[in-house]
Image 1 (tube, rainbow, N blue to C red):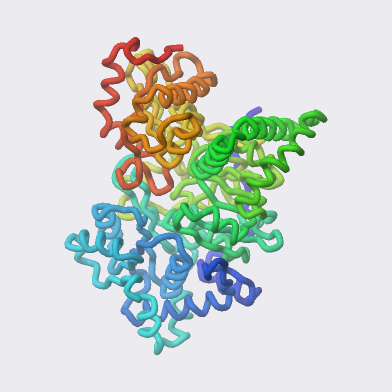
Image 2 (tube, one colour):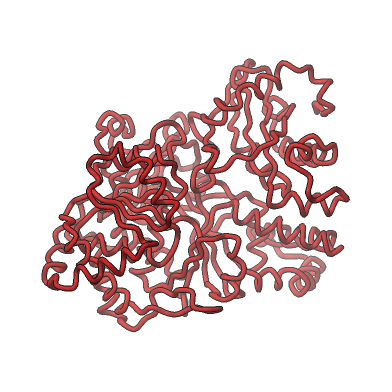
Length: 610
């Protein structure tokens, strides 16, 4: 019988008195000279030991105390993914304050809402650009009494300011919070409305870190375990991994600019990565198009097909045929080995979240020797609720439930969660909090199902289900995810609610487009508008849609599409910082384009209705 719920007991006894600072204290006591971080240093990296990090944290915490920050007060922080982000984070913990992280791409209006709703009394910015956006919002932030500018030397100034604060005061403050107290206030991305502040407690992080470290011990305890973070630390996903790394003794590096990611991977040589599916798609598509440019496109595609086939057979515990094994060993030298080296040569695991990775990419990377551990969670669940584990992997699922966590599937298919990771409440929003829970279970809004082995699969968002005029219910993600994997496609949104058929809005990938155009005999400097109207580009998009349509019924298939002459980005307000689409915003902003799809007769589009 297929399970409809799964609850796994915690494997580490809970400590209601512990807070996040205790994780660092115990790490320093156990391994003071262990390299806990590494920072860029010329062409290489300079290690920072646990003891040195602790010293810097206490030093900066004293600065916050001297600056008048009181325990429990909210402090905003706008910065990119760097070592200093975590340094400030822990210094605020040690000072007894509560950080309100702000995405570095947030607009002045978003900054104003998050800081005012949180009741923040101070804010730190990393760059002049961040400071300018905060200044724009500051007239509507009367509670903000202090602003620190890192680009103007704020960290050094705070260290100097706190020189006379006693160690005993920091020790007193860091021990004030117990497990049930608020650790941080993280605002949702606002994909369905105004962002809500999630109250995450110290226990949420501490208990989840301790249990996850045991559950994923092969990842965090392997010799020389290290990771290079490049997704934003303002998001709960990277924030949790950072705290997990400190607890488990994993060395962490940072690369805020993804344009420099490959060189950074090559020099840092991490053992595991944390990424969203779009990153894996980019790695694959870049390799494919590079091979195409060098006249080796057919070899790469053959290698990819071999990798996927072999991995699928191995997952099914089916013997790999001799000829397939021979081809795999050949391609390992020609293709796979080079990709492994491009990612640093030491990556064994990759943790993927925020959206479905897709069966094909999971199998492809598995054959590279990189086990992708796809997981599932939300801000409200302190990141992971389920995750595939090294000894328990099923590609195409988001894995089994983590220790200390319970997941059930309601009668309507909604995934609901309770346990050590579930947030306390929405800040100053009792109505939203009450609506988010049912009998003590957090209602995620996602649709999913367990298989016979207890692995969860997420199929879409409850509120995003499209109901056609004919009454057919369609989960758009099942169509969108495989289409988005095509190198020429940036994003795709399926539409069709109360319409006669399913259609799609498509944007092109401006990074991949020039290479694809050149590989297909077209001018590489073609504009997005010209490319959107180009017959070869449209034919490529049609091929991607035809491939996705094969996996669904005719009633669920995409019959028409339009390519927009623009991109959806964080800056345009159409993507979240973790690269998820803001569907409601897109449907509103591009309503005229959607209407045109259904108003123009099908025969004028030049597309097949198969």
